[in-house]
Image (spheres, rainbow over the protein chains, first blue to last red):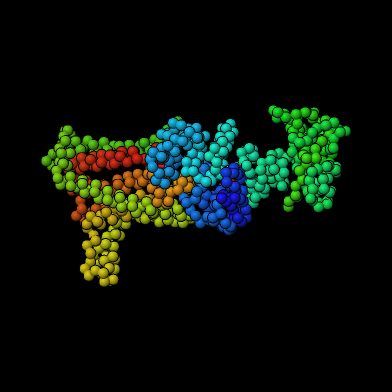
Length: 347
Length: 278
Ligand SMILES: Nc1ncnc2c1ncn2[C@@H]1O[C@H](COP(=O)(O)OP(=O)(O)OP(=O)(O)O)[C@@H](O)[C@H]1O
Ligand SMILES: [Mg+2]
């Protein structure tokens, strides 16, 4: 048994002289739900297409269970794909769509029928066999696309923004359903999305990409709580990112004030960036605050208030809190040591 | 309101140049003929009965056969061409399409005469083969059904290629990738996905080639040298030589029905999404 089912080693990809992927290293464990997350155009689809065999990498090696498969054509890979816009065959019905792969493998009729039934049950669409594809709703098409891929019992399933076309409510439902399906069938899912919330709720591990480079790989908590740089911090959730100086281990200077933190291992007086999540800042009385400032705006967001507070050095903090301050009021800000995340400065 | 107004010229056009002539022909085809060939406005089915004579049925059969052969040949040659064009890069694609369209700008007669020059006994092809020593006597390339079929294929091929090309170039490539992803080899991808999805284009192409092929008289006249009489020649003869407008009209009606039936049958195979020219 191999430790990794899929490995990318030093994969690069250029279209013409435009480099789209620059040196991707990635190892994926069996049965893992792994998500490629990044803004539009950062190379997520390209990475997926290289794994699926629809695109050849310019440099680097791709391994499937330790075997190099760079030159293996898609139809010989034990990998199936759920395409960005489903790509269901419009000229045949639901049954024939799901049975497509099995018929190619020349499986016996009665077995095909059994397996298709099973799949329809799995995706909650029993009785849809005879329906035409264009008579289905987006969510139903999406589930047929998953069934069509899963029925082949692939070792790895690639999903390219499968929920992108659905409305918010359906999207949430399908997220839960997809996760359930993955756990039930126990295969590796490589999932692509540019929705950070989706990535964080569904994945075992998240890969944050930007401009063809991997920025960070980690489980959702790590990615959220310990972003390695400004890009990841900015992309994942909302945050206050402010310049700082790492005076010494466990002590950081932000906005001319010294704060205790939980990070170490930086050089003395190294210039760094600090991330503080808006929900990690407490509003206190002015004299009790580590920083003091004026409330610039207050917006009620349903559960909490979103406030902008400009400190006396001029930085504007975004704060989420259930306590409300009044606009124009002077308040203090209090930040716990473990709410301060130190990041290497880039560029 | 405005839109309706815009369609008036078109309606007028089709009224004057299609509908009225069809009505006239329909009436003529049911009229009696005076001994001197004048039209007597009395109802009769004689013109249609006359068509049931073996020599005319033979012409009908030959027309359908040659048209079917040419249409099939166009499909066999045209489909791969359409595929090749749809796969090339945009720049080269326009050049290739131009290569198809430019000959259409030259006169139809001129193009057909050009083939006569090539196929004659002293024509380029025979001369070349004799020069190579492959043959001693010139081959009879002209004035036979083969030459007629060749002329039809040459002239009507673009009508097959263009609609198929138009469907293929619009086809979502992710469908092809999905089929490959599910284990289909390139042959299976073609049989199970590309070809069925291109049916609207194929059907359009079949109709667009079959229609002119079954009704042509110029090609059979020039390349067939009067040896190969087709429906078109028959109609032309009846109107211009025999001066039997009634019988000519009846044959025209029969041909029209034939074409309508062909369209009817083929439109069944046309996808409701369309994508062809109809
Ligand atoms: N076939 C191609 N030829 C040229 N450039 C391409 C091709 N495919 C992708 N690109 C370019 O590669 C870059 C990455 O594209 P990719 O589709 O991988 O992005 P993505 O992360 O999936 O974005 P999105 O979230 O919008 O789907 C883009 O700048 C895109 O324009
Ligand atoms: Mg994409």
